Image (cartoon, rainbow over all chains, first blue to last red; front, top):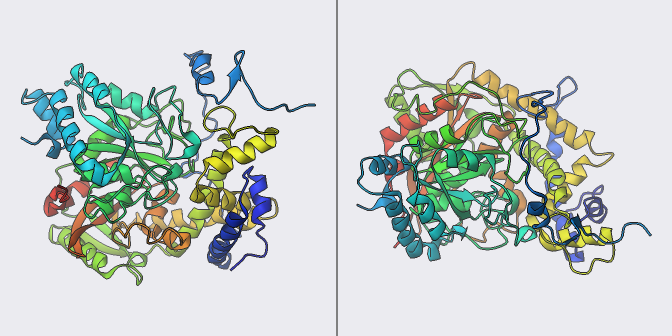
Length: 95
Length: 483
């Protein structure tokens, strides 16, 4: 079973996720079956229904603009896979 | 006296009466854990010496003073590992305490150990852990449920009196049911998620496991409340969640949703649940048949919304700031692609792809927006039901604990079994699972869970109803037959 619209390889790239050929085949099949199952939502008429994003809609939550204690920089640099000179190190982005 | 059989409340009473000390309690747990943990494998790690040190200075005058509480491996505890049972976080050490941990410490409790789970809380069996398979204490050839399987199994195996888990679609209530303990999902907004590794932010809620409803109420007292660091935590007047314990069921209106008693569930589970409901009726509860007409859509709505939110939340695991980074990346894109490929397990990848797809251009309206609209219909179903009843009573899971490995290749089948727990998260209501009997299979007794679902923010009453049933039935006193 395979959903015609779902291109697992393309979606995985959007999600910044490399997959093996075997994973692509397995997911194509499994997700195709899941997408087929959820098709039944289309039976419902929801034209006049507002979407729910959160069950208790709370808006514009702010806190007092008072400086609090922050974790020291070392706490974060210490858990990074690579750092130097108080910076996170990544491969070269610009030529 | 065997201290491992005592509830958190009983331990506290014993500490205060001078019968034994918090160090005695940790020593007893250490012995128990060393004896049964090789069979159960609930803990990813634990540090008895640190716990004893904390016990030596525990202030037993505090509400949970000196009580050890096990922690699901998705909640940050400063200085401890926190992997969400994923390889992508191997070697990560938390630089801070989650708010629930700060609050537990303020209540005198001792956060203890890291409990196994499905990777990033995605699963219903704890088989998706990248590290180990946790076993059901009632039959170690079976799964403990999930995703908080370690939290449930540790309580059921008397390894710790109470634990914290997280519930996005049933991840507290379902393992509590399958392991024969009590598990509470508080109402959305009750408990801060600051320091919880996010799965689906509109659904996630932290909650307790214990062997009594009273302990769950005590833990909720400790962890609930507004937190400026989680803008979804609600600013409500302080409440004592033990206030309705000890009441009875006389005149309590219990709704029986007809859609929750249909073919497809294990007939033996159904029989136990119906027996429990009759028992509630005999004790004076008024049974009211209700309808939750959009029940059949809940699983589909859930797997769209939860995966969409997960695909966004898990974008932070990029190999840059913490966690695993692939070796020798040739550029930044390669670093992202391979760090995530190597770090995430199959179920997590499957859900990231589904979530990315339902949010992608051209499909957003058809899947994600439509699911949010059907979510509104599901919420309305509950709103209408609660005009007629005080709480809803139903099964927690349609199945008993199944054999390890039985369903790993069939994700759809695994997802469909979440039918009775998912709607509570979509509707933001509170829910609790309590033991309601046992079914014999293969010479082993397997627990069955009864679920009560309460109105939004009606957690105190929900706990009162569950406590009343628990005192009537006494099923929570059964102990798993581990050697």
